[in-house]
Image (cartoon, rainbow, N blue to C red):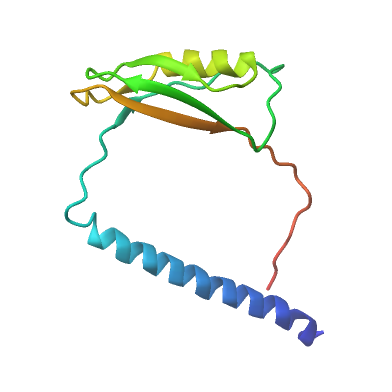
Length: 130
């Protein structure tokens, strides 16, 4: 019976060690900050509401839908051009982007946003015990 628990215990220990390495690496990167010579991003999002997608809007999971737009010098969004997508999604993304605001970048900046629907279903519950 003790040997049956050993693989689970070893897997748990390996997971803890790997997690520790990842956290240590992230902490090291965070302490170094942004390398010299890299300019700050030109766009800084100030506010955005919720994307309201109608419940009957049929979009495919895992498909990336792109919308191009321009952030004007004063931070407002203009010239919204969704790529091919269901009409309900294009309308929802356009409405959402009309309510988005950025810190004024001082000049018009063409940009794009990618949106993808992701669904998950509950397959089962895994319980780890000591």
